[in-house]
Image 1 (cartoon, rainbow, N blue to C red):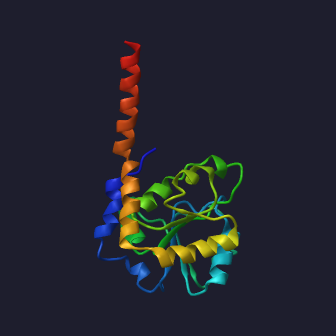
Image 2 (cartoon, one colour; image 1 turned 180 degrees about the vertical axis):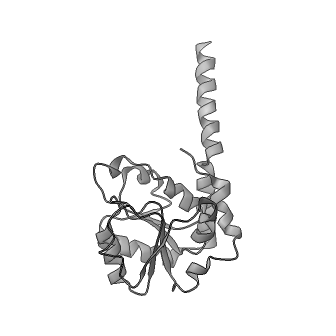
Image 3 (tube, rainbow, N blue to C red; image 1 turned 45 degrees about the vertical axis):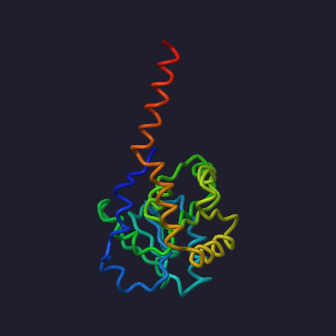
Length: 195
């Protein structure tokens, strides 16, 4: 798949952030997507306890039990956000996370949100999913829960406008248009070799 680069890269130009974020202390450790059973809620709980000064914002529809973390002071659930508003919300993130469990389901996923986060220019911290390893030079891949927290700290310290530009450029190469062009070239080359 490819990322809707034009849509997600526009957060670079956003100047206003939703009122929901006005009262949330920085830094904001953000996630958008389905709040589903494949998220590692123990990891999220650990992050919130180890770094109570961080705000963890999980945007998206909830389709699983979140009672264990729903009452934690520095964990926020704004709910479902319209697709056209996601770049504006992502502009408020200091880092983005992909806190997926590693199991039979997730080892086979190719999370589109990784490319969406990169198109936003965001530093990305993720659990060690096979598909994210292709981007190991651009994302922070954790080995365990403690390492996940350390990688967030490193990402916060290292982030810069140059790194954000590099992430956007990487995502642009993985845009829907670029992906379609690559497939078109493969097909044309194959057809030319047949004839």
